Image 1: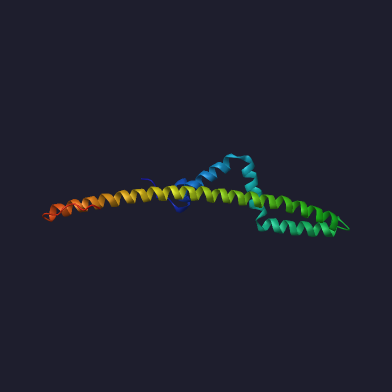
Image 2: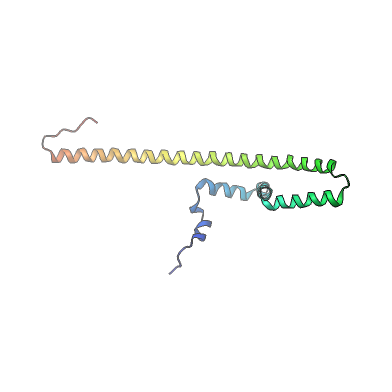
Length: 143
């Protein structure tokens, strides 16, 4: 007898995720550039990133440069340029993910609508047949 699956086991199971999420994760895992961008974006959006920069800039201003502002301004400006690029990469990734999920959901909903329509028609036909057999002289309706 196998042990029952725990919630942590199901969290790593691909069937517990939306198909678009699973496809997106697989795609990003296969590409080295995307993995690097994800790692940088993940770190740059964390509090350790803020702490490291606060300490680094403070140490720079106190111990390294007697007049830190010109070089520090240049460094911070360049870093802002690169970080804004990573923000845009993340936004583009999120937009593509949302579009893929919306497309998948639309197809799934259309399939469900078609199935429900077919079932409703079949129920209607069966109801008419039962009515015709039970009620003497009943004629099939045109609907």
